[in-house]
Image 1 (cartoon, rainbow, N blue to C red):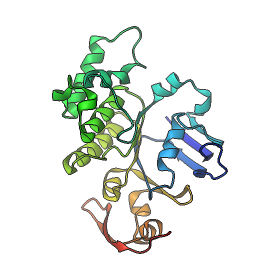
Image 2 (cartoon, rainbow, N blue to C red; image 1 turned 90 degrees about the vertical axis):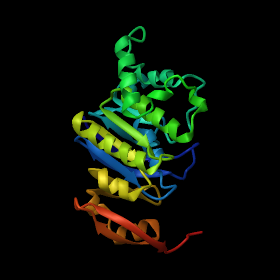
Image 3 (cartoon, rainbow, N blue to C red; image 1 turned 60 degrees about the vertical axis):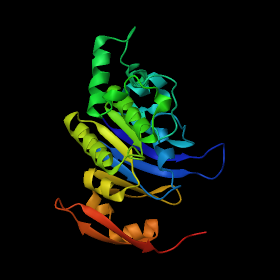
Image 4 (cartoon, rainbow, N blue to C red; image 1 turned 120 degrees about the vertical axis):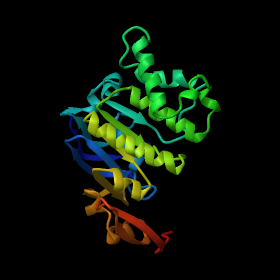
Length: 263
């Protein structure tokens, strides 16, 4: 499975101002890829171009050589599962049904016992089996996030894209979800792309980091140790920092103070 992003640019509502512009990315092997960067640089906009939510002004996203724009929505859903940022989904249905929605591309006529087994196994994996019959719109923001991740997992796609999947989760679950995504990428030979504002989680668990900066461009793509450096973090984020190595040689960031606030 290969994702090729070729000279991609996108603007909202026909505006001449591009939110992202001239983006080029080539992902040709399984792994966990983290997109990082300050607010407003187009991270969410970019990943929505991967699955046809956004239609680029110029350029293309290709999956194994096929332009996503030329694929049906159902065919895209067979290849790419998507976890939106917390708060975008609201369902007046039980959690088990909300998660079953992720099985629609795998189903022929109706829900089977195999579908239910996959759903219950995934709910257990995420520690939310007790929520199965609760109404989705009765849950907390953190529980919503776990349900959204479960729905993507049961879709069983070779590519998974997640927009800040650890948002609203406590520290324990942030680490658990990051570890789970890393294990899934390796065990199932998946391409998993995750937006993260936590530089240390991104560094510790990702195979490669995609760093975006103003004005909606790619600053650097590479291994965490090559991307997360003192100079780069200070220039892109405008915050002082020190970089330390963990026991696996991955950089960890200790923030110090804001260097500037641009008006």
